[in-house]
Every structure is written in C-alpha cells, then in structure tokens.
Image (cartoon, rainbow, N blue to C red; front, side):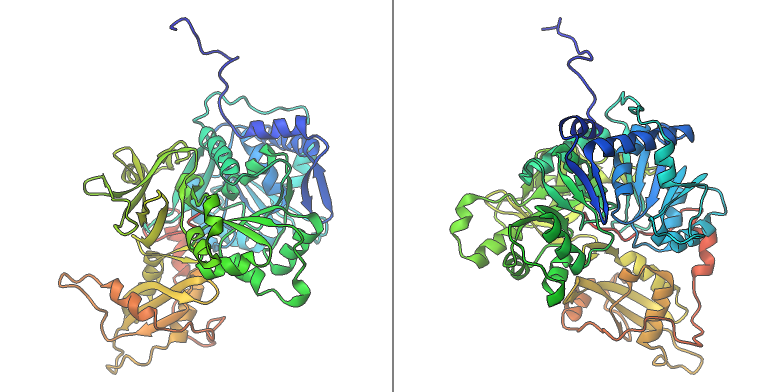
Length: 584
C-alpha cells in the first residue's frame, strides 16, 4: 500500500470553520441567530463572518494574533468564533465576571492585538486599560446596541461598522495545519498565576463532534445561550449549533424571566448551564414563569448537582444530562450517558446515577482513575479514590507561555486533572474531592490560594485559610478562617468580620468574596506547621452563610487597599494574580 498518497482530495485539516460554511450552503434560509428583535439566517451569518474576517485582515490581524472580547452572549461574540479564526487569528473570550485587574492581566499576558468591548462593560474595560498604560492592545473596538447613547462608544472602531465595511466574498485564510491555535481561554486552577489554555483547530473540531453526538443533539436544535460563551467557547456549542444547522437564541442575562420567555417564545430544545441555574429556574416568581410544553434538554456541569436538585428541575419539564470537564479538556470530557435499563429504577435512584460524572466523550482515547505515584489504575469498586486523568484529541495544546506548567500537567502520556474520584464497576467515574482545594460556587472556580493571598495583605491578619462551606443557593461559597495580630493595646477583638469583607470587596471579583469569616486564636496545624484544612472544612459545614454582609466599604474605614499596587504587579504577570473561572 506504499503507493497510496495523502493529497488535497483525501486529506483536509480539521477545523470547526467548516461547520459554518456547510450551514450556509445546506441551511441557508434557516434562522441562525435570534437576539431581541434581530434575526439572521445561516447565509447572513456566514456573510457577516466573512466581512468581519476581511476587516480584521485589513487591520493587519493575522496568524496567531490574539483577538480579545469582553461581552455577554450576543450575536457579535457568536460571530467572532468563526470570523476570528477565518482571519487566521486566535479568539480570547474574557470572563465578564472578572475585575479590572484580572482583565488587564489577561490582556498583558495574551498580547492581545484587538480588544472588542460591549457597551455594557465600557466602564470595566476603561479601568482595565488604565493598568496597561497604552502598551496593548493596539486596536480597541466597541460593540454597540442600537440604543447605545451618544458618547458611550470608545475605541477606534465599532463592531457593526467593521462588519459592513468588509468584503462578503472573502472566504477566510486557508488552514494549513489543524494543530494551529484557534482559541485562548484563561483558567486559574489553584496555582498562583492565571494560565492561558490553547485549543487547536483539530481539538475544537473533534470535541464539538463528540459533544453533539454524546448529547444526541439532533438536526435543527433551538439552543438557548444560558451558558456564557466565555466558558470554554460555550463548551464548543458555539461551533456545534452551526454543525447541526440550529438556531442560537442569545440573551444578555441568565435571569429566570429571560430564560422562561425565550423557551416559550422560541420553543427552545437545548441549553447548557451550571447547576446554579437550576435554582434560578426553580425560584422564579409566578409572573416570570412560562409553561414548558415540550422537554428541554439541559447539559449541566461545573459542580456536581445534588440528586434532589435534579429531581426538582426535571419535574418542571427539563431533561438533564450531567457532564464533567475543565478548560484544559475543551469543556466537557465526561458525560453521564444514560442507559435504558435505568428507566425502571425509582426516581431518587435515577437522580443519584445522573449525578455521577460519567464516561469519556468520543474524542478522548481514555479516562481513568490512577495512583499518581505509580500510575496504576484504581480498582473499579466505587470506593478507592485516585486522580482523574485523561488523554485524547480534545485535550489542550498546552498553557500559553508556560512550558513548566504544561510539563506538570502532562504526565506519562496523561493529562492530570487535579481532581480526585472513584470509578464504579460499570465504568462510570464520580468526583469525590478537589485535590487542590478549589471552591466551586455557582459553577465558578474560586482558588483558595488567591483569596488567602488577599487576606494575608490585610495589616491585621496573621494567618488565613479558606475552605468551602455549604451555600443554599450557590452550592459552595468561601469561608475564611483567620487569626489576628494584636494591636498596640495587645487586643485582637477589634477586627470585625465586616472590615475583612469590605477589604476583600476592594480587591477581588464579587463572586470570590467570603460569605463567612471566622476568627480563631490559632489555626490548626500539623507538626510541620501546615494548616489542617480538613479540620476547618468540618467546622465550615456547621456554619450558616452570613447574608448581611456589607455591600460597600464602611465610611471612614482606614483599611488600606492593595489596588494602588496593582499597576506595578500586572505588567509582570505576578505571583498572586489568579483568575477564578469555571471548571468547565
């Protein structure tokens, strides 16, 4: 068979861009995007992406240039998932829940050439850009709604103007190597610096196919964007909906009213979300609800959903599929694939099975639970815990500008997730703990290391440790345990919880703020001086969330802020700049 040759006829580099081209040809007149009063067809979406890609090229945006965007789930962000790689560039969707310091860190580290900012986040972007002192990015463009007030726009360009001035006949740069980068997504894990996770065209393509197959997404789905597109590129469904010729229903806010109205008005068939969104739907007020007349498929991940919560949400007319993944795996890596025989089980038993993380998606060559010291596989007994490890084409290329972290993540041919779990006799995996003390609050990853580093900057904090505590709405929330330095009078009881919370509010994104602060004379430690967090976790389980925390710093407080130090720390991509992102 040596005479058989690879050629253009039998080998084409894999890229999800082909999903859009196919949708334009096969589903030309089918609705592609719905956003408030705006509707596009797949032919129009393809043309708009071609135009934007051409405009980016005219601005000298090319191969491996990073294009960052700070915006909610609007058509512009969806279009960029195709237009930016069509121009040969790399898309970086920024978590809109981050503060200005973290956004500045991302822009610095990524070396973004273009920065698109939605009108809703102009003030936040302005703050971030002040940290950069004009160094990057070189091109700033606004994304304006039709009712954007005069004077709100900033930057050299406006998104819609760039779209309109581009050539609709431009078909994009030819992808020569499917290993080329297509997206750059930042995650924190539990290390002391944000990591930029790089996806390849090949990985994005194969992961997309695996998920639409694993979720059994049929043709012409109506997909509600309840999941942020900045979370692993919408778990690849930014590309997946195009592959199925579906309709993207875009919403700015994941509110009960917007979700129920969209489901009813557009006959939504599919949506993704973290389990916290279940609570939003369940707690909706009567006037916000709409009857669900046909089942809505939900793919959930980001935090293990309690079985009781699954029962409640499915009683409303939703059908839940549970997934597990992380940014480094291009989103979901495991899916709790349902087995017909389980339908005969009582509802509580079904919910328990559905709460497991499941089996590997098709893109993965393997998923296992191993002893990292020996790399031996753990027995399939549902009891013996080990590290969850993965390998396959959906795993990231590596961490951007961080070969050391990349080397640590890849071990003996496996990607080490940092999560601890068990594997059941039927091959289904289940997470049991987070090996690096990650707190998952409403689907967002919160690094205890990041929070502790801020607490230690407070002039009166002697020791600090942060663990997860139960939260009735968010699943988990941070609980801080601190010991205080004595004041000039030798007292420690003059430091109040409100002061610590106010200090954190000045220096952290809102979702990372501790919901409880406990003062201790001394934190429990091992004989070698290491804080025993397992003891603190047990204490945290007995505590109630403090819902009466201050929203602003108390007037007249002398608590110093570290914000004035950030301008010198951000450019150096420093030791304590950690992003809190979703595990998925």
